[in-house]
Image (cartoon, rainbow over all chains, first blue to last red):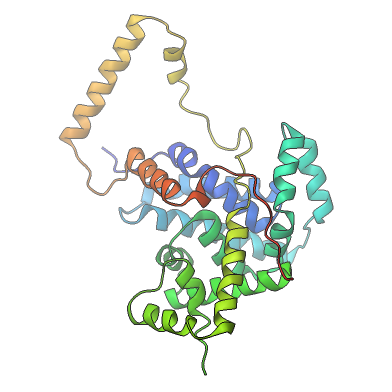
Length: 166
Length: 135
């Protein structure tokens, strides 16, 4: 009998919403978030065969942030990020119950825009902490840095957000 | 006077312990600048945590196993009995071949659920007043 802990479909169902929210808050638009979630699930599907019992969430978030970083590196070579206005229209046109969804999204618009202004390392630390809800230890494991670095990135990220939002 | 500013976020996140916690608590009681920064950081933290939780777009994550669907449509006793037999077989197999390293979906759900119930910020999206920054 194989010792695979979960099927990738189960991982998708249990963690899909968290991975999507992580992806959306880091990329700032639904198209990139969708691509990132698909890439993460693909990597999970491939990786589960070789998964060694241990911290499953640590493994999953390591895959997730690595997929995000690979995406950032790819885009740095070929920058095609849409403007924020285009993002809003895309959401409005495609979402079911568009009015409600738009109200929900615009509520956090200024915060989302400020998040996107942060350097990637700080944005990632703040999102893993405040959106995904990981502990500092879990973030350190996912990002492969010491806990002191996580602490510093979160604090500096929040200070930058304060300045951007004031 | 040195300001242990970098400890402030860790303090808010419940990630500060022992000597560092004592140092910061003592410092905050006598330093207006750090007390103000604590308030700022609290506001930023709440603002990010108040971001609406977005639902995953349809089709991105696979739906529940389609085998479950006929049961809901009440196809009769035979389907239920078959499902019960499958469940027993799975339960027996699981009992006979425990895998201490594996993670069950119930365990994950309970961890996930526990976090949501402990921290309202991770519950369903709420409509909240956006935080106002600055004066």
